[in-house]
Image (cartoon, rainbow, N blue to C red; front, side, top):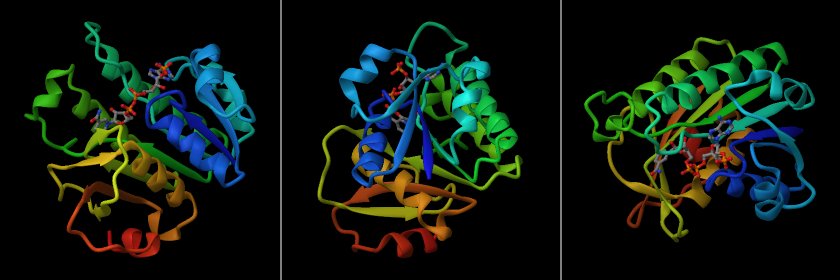
Length: 218
Ligand SMILES: NC(=O)c1ccc[n+]([C@@H]2O[C@H](COP(=O)([O-])OP(=O)(O)OC[C@H]3O[C@@H](n4cnc5c(N)ncnc54)[C@H](OP(=O)(O)O)[C@@H]3O)[C@@H](O)[C@H]2O)c1
């Protein structure tokens, strides 16, 4: 298995890369800044300079990979096209490339509440709306996918158990980025994760479940 990680230098992406490397899985990382990547990520990762808004920069790397994990996201800015360009058009570009290159499993980090148009997060240039459009495009693509919708992302890991639920059933809560990364990587190895939207948060009083139980419960 050769995994293409897009958004690898992001706060969640770097945990995804680290998890994959701990399992000795070969990783190709699409990065926009080589120096940042070399500073942040394990040295044995194959770095490719690329940008999701320019599919030509990613095509060759994609052709060498069998599965893909996308953890990109537009950074808050005054550019009102950011979420459209990155969270929608960028992901759409990845889906098209994935189809052309017979990618076996496409994992996308999306977000809770994408279906709530009047959510305050949509004040950031309709970011949730554009994420949902990207989700729809993946679902209609014919690719095998897992859409991971986390709650609010935290940098500190915790000892709480993961709650995993189906689309549009969780509307609040948070989860450490480390656990989001784990869910993305585990999805690659679990048939029950295929062609599902999984919403995830952590809760102190939830019961521990195996990965198989978590994915099968959705
Ligand atoms: N913040 C929250 O509470 C929250 C909650 C739910 C879901 N989410 C979503 O979860 C995902 C991960 O969030 P995060 O905070 O861990 O992400 P992040 O740290 O903001 O990282 C985003 C990544 O996307 C990359 N990126 C942005 N534009 C790109 C482009 N045009 N081409 C290629 N790469 C590009 C960035 O590259 P550089 O490193 O070069 O900048 C970075 O690696 C995002 O989709 C986010 O919207 C966030």
